[in-house]
Length: 342
Image 1 (tube, rainbow, N blue to C red):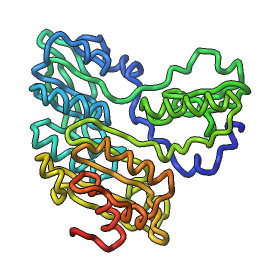
Image 2 (image 1 turned 135 degrees about the vertical axis):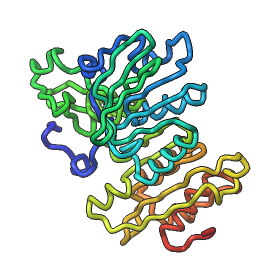
Image 3 (image 1 turned 90 degrees about the horizontal axis):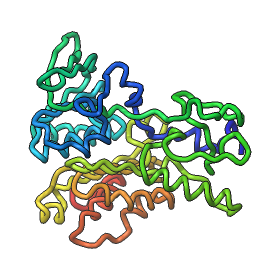
């Protein structure tokens, strides 16, 4: 399959790639030094806990490290240029995470753009703009978590006829084939979500195709996202906003973990399960979970979407009691207009 003739689903479902710029690209402006101004890679090699941590970027990586180091005892301030944390997630999910962070005394600054960062004797001094006001703050360490760009320049791709897409990504089809015969590409260089399980799935498909096996093309719209902050976030498929923008008439259901027995047994009733479905046939378009074990629970939703589940089939699948998974069925019931435990 030539790169310009993709299957229809690829044009309908945009990839959930990370936003922002490459940390290396940001170096000219932020002067990453691997000590005071760092990426997530250096955060695992710190020899002491920073008392004050600044984090630029409230996507998955920024949210995870902000949550982690707050749990360790650091004072954390999180900057995001967009209006909410986890901006690629469903807006209601982002709202829950933002409130939880503030409750944990993580200072969250949205609609805030960092303009400069300078290493000084006492740490890192940051200048940022919030609205029309310019402010400064100082931290022991500054984590840059604004995304990474692919390393695809100056490696000879043009010599085999591969033209890069916007952002430097390599265009591929559903079997990870590029426009050059015999050349496949997977992982961060192809513009899909920068997640290990996505790259692994792409590798499986690419190797099967190379070996001449019949294999269905990847459905990139059904790749789950998992964010390991507190509370956890798991999601797959379309958000409510994206589904509405695509022209779908929707049925949407939510079920709070506060009404789930297992969540209360665990002492963690934060968050909810949200199911987004199209109205006519009830086909499930997306599932979004924020709360306890969300990154485990989302696997059920991935299977549901892969098998084109409807609200009825998802709700009628018997879920054991008491479990967190009951919230998935309850959200499907709510979306169908017949909630069991309203």
